[in-house]
Length: 467
Image (cartoon, rainbow, N blue to C red):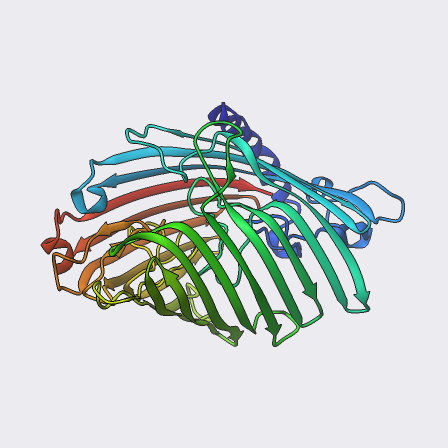
């Protein structure tokens, strides 16, 4: 059913947006950024007729329900089809795999003066997979987001918003809380959050439980094992909000956490800061965090740092951009002592390092460089190359969901894998995009000493339509 809907939609996509693009180009339209969360987009400016361009999506983005413009409806959707093919997954310990993900996510955002109701179902499916399904493969038909929000003006430039329900959201760079946009099923949370917002500051407080996504219809439920709470503050350093500083505290309770040392009840407190910005051709995103808490009968003492720095040659042919990434997530130094040193990334972004990384941010040193060029205005070609090392040779390596992939007990080698990735992106118009990608993970000494050690090869092709 989902495949049929996507196929019919693709026909409409080939006609309507492309013809509309001939009248109004993306450069002429100043629109909100279309985000994975969708509820962060503000289309209320379309209340002013002078700011409308006549683009075909505007009639869906602002549907007035009152004469004064205080009540209106915003709607939109995303339809995505994605093929993934793997040879020698997990370095050959699992059989070759290939499948197609389908997802269709319409939404409605109703604004009634100071109140708001946001609803987004998800219709998802997977075809061709010859393996047990995972939580990111499909959740059938389910409620991805459904929440109520009340907004109050406390002062001329200070507002308070309170929301409760099911929501997809990200904090900062998504290193600890993220929407998990890359896989087929995003990561929603059930709970409540409060945000104080001013012109250059925001303070956000939250208490949520992750939603356990399952195959089948209308059966996704709040986790009874995990809960997250915290405070996240941002100080922007310029009017465009391109630069700023984050300070945050996040707490996690997990009644059944599992690491190389065993399983047990985990209570971890994360305190961190992020400095991000853009000046001239330079962009940067630097973050560090420490963790304290308890795991079974051990004390948690972990830390991590993440850095991304890039430089764009905007005035040059092909507009090349060079980027460098360095990540460090601590590992446990001694399984026999009373301390746990394995960094816990909570619920990080689904594409933490590169698109097809089999390794997650625990007990890891990751170094990567990339080059992106634009041979045509709407086409980008990027090449990434990097490596993965264990931070501690007494701890294992973990996958993106946080499960142990290889125990560290059988090797003292540090070097895990080399990685290469080539991607081509084409933004056909404002709504329609295509991506093709190939990647290679070349096993190194640690993988060779702990089991099968074949190179992982992946091919990915994605078509996405969203507005």
